[in-house]
Length: 465
Ligand code: UD1
Ligand code: CA
Image (cartoon, rainbow, N blue to C red; front, side, top):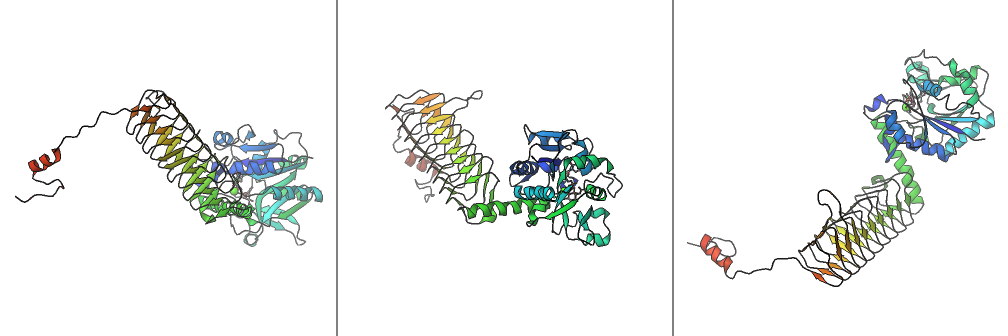
């Protein structure tokens, strides 16, 4: 039988003190609600429905094509579930309910929670944790140790506040039994809200089974309500992700200074140096050396490539290619294997051919550079005339002299040369020299005459009167 999931993500998150809805905040580069959604998917849940409300447009844009239902007026977690009743009509079986603000939950834990409910034939299984967070709901058990309810900290008696087993906000319900009893929720509590947590006592007093599963990784229960907890969750997920990569053969010289988003793929013997962030749809091939001080987003880095102190977005870096230091590769950049873009080089929407080098201080935009081309220091493509972008094509084996302005649209033939300092606005045929310079004129004795006039010698120091 399939398991459905319902993710509660309609709350404002007042304690974040933010214009952004809480679940849209990033943990290790990924919006929290997206992390929770992907975990539900990897636990095999189908459908996965998300309850949105506060900032719904923003939250739904983070889940393109996924099923969202709106909760009108955020009257509590129980009310959020009520607003999803229509969307889940007719579904019977295990329904996981997750909080959009609890991003460290693991798929295997969710599967265990479902199993625990189904094996016990219980109406609900609750995931609990032992963490010292005074704001979480407490798990109340009877003398025999059975769970009889959950009490919110604002409603708890002093002796209940001493309970160290807390509610992670993650449950597996028998969907039929949940919706059959949902109208019994009331809002007579300290916050005047419909608490989903009250369902535990309601089901129990209806004579139905309630079980609790305690997670062995308390980080899973970390709810994010404040920016302090956002940072703590980021740190915990960073440790979890980096540990897995290191155990799989990645070297991190200081893992506390490396941020790798979930979903980024790293090969064997990759080395990541400090102050480096890898995010989005990114993969790094075996033996690549990344960092220090590097940011890579949505890019493919080939085997053995080196990316030093650079920013790489939406680019493909071929095997054994090198980038930086201080490089900037923008979307649409393709560096072929063994090519090089060096210090202070920016490339956008361009292909740099195999073995070609752009070593220093260049801008290459909307260009196709062939194989074994050398682009001298300071050369740039003038691709934008103020209205439109134009292309530059450089043939295989061409030599672009330092400080060449390639005024696009323009094509440099294979094996052609441009003279240093030239502004090249017309095509240069294959094998030709393109030179655009006014001829140099030397004025003999000019410097000596100037110093005689101003009373300084040619070295610039004052001559004696
Ligand atoms: C909730 C639990 C608490 C548990 C904690 C775990 C309740 C009453 N309390 O408290 O026992 O220890 O989570 O982290 O459930 N939401 C909606 N609509 C609403 C209100 C909330 O969708 O009307 C969503 C929020 O966006 C959030 C989640 O539900 O993702 C939890 O809400 P939150 O207000 O953070 O509950 P807690 O006070 O943390
Ligand atoms: Ca919370």
